[in-house]
Amino acid sequence: MTFFASLQRSPIMKGVSTKTTTIFSKLMRNPLMQQHYPVQQQMQTTQQLQIRGMASKKHKRVIKMAKGYRGRANRCFRLALSRVEKALQYAYRDRKVKKRKFRSLWIQRLNAGVRQYGLNYSQFIHMMSGKSRAAEGVGGNVKLNRKMLADLACNEPFSFKAVVDVVKMTNK
Amino acid sequence: SIDQRGCACSCLLQNLLSTMSFPGRQAQRAWHLIDASNQTVGRLAATIAPILKGKHKPTYRPNGDCGDYVVVINADKVDFTGKKWTDKLYRHHTGYPGGLKTRRALDLLQRQPESILRKATLGMLSRNNLRHKYIEPRLRIYAGSEHPYASMIGTDMSNTMEPVPRKKEANYHFGLGKGYAGATLPKDRKSDS
Image (cartoon, rainbow over all chains, first blue to last red; front, side, top):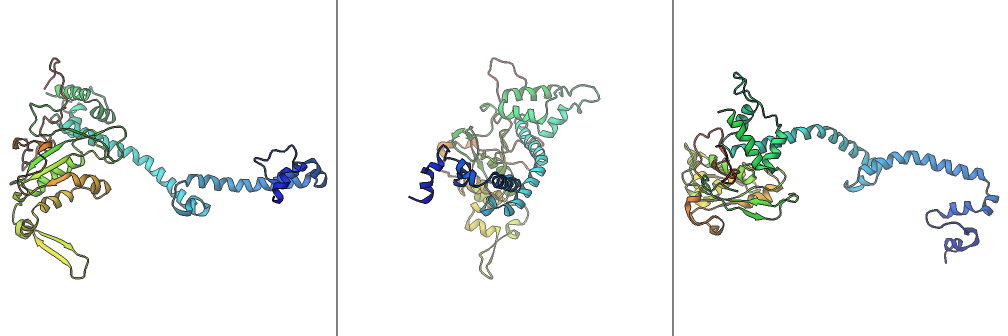
């Protein structure tokens, strides 16, 4: 039996749970030990623990963001920091780029959807916006945006055909 | 659903499973037959490439594999305008010093007739894993008029896509004809156009 194993079973450890605390802190909690080692020393150790905690909090935050990174960058703060900073820069930039990319995708889908019915995207938008009959003051009643139209073209083909028919009818 | 009456091209829809990142939805892939005789190479390739990529579908997604199969026959009867048969050069380097190989289009036609159209179409597709693994294998080019996909496409030749016009209209639907996959209401309901 090792020293620590025998210590765990000794009367010093009586009444102290052995699951989450270290041997040292268990020893310190025992009243017999506290007689020999006064309270001040205990306070020092907890203060030291608190100071270490503040620095390692920032480290832990960065390393948590570096999950899945290749090599030691997912474990070591100094390596992770630059990669995480770059990732955050990309995230900032791409939040704006995402809006552009989705609009482009909706337009591509609309183009494909509308060409099935003998139009193309530019003609369709021109007719839908009411500019083709602006002089007469007719048209422009379909207020759907590209996102909704693309969603209809993709998932609701009959509704999409109805919209295309309405746009065509107002522009005969 | 296909409007059988108006459709000028053919395709048999086949439900095939499994694609790159296509959550919860099966890809429907159609087979298209193209007769390449007397069609200009670049113009034909420019209509084939979007079909392979899936851009003719309103369910297009750039990251998912949603293109169709394209079978091209009579690829050796394809045409170049001008003096390209003698003047156009296909070059590649073997990697060894002095290993630049140059061939005229005419010579390539004799060695590997399918590769003229193949190079043209693949040059119009993006170079990424999606294309190399999934899209490229769906382009089937044959020099003669025989192809092994009679079960997919059917044996009568009236199914082929129309030849690419010299000048495309603004609403050119990727070569597929105006009746392709248009949503049709059931016959007892009224519909316009």
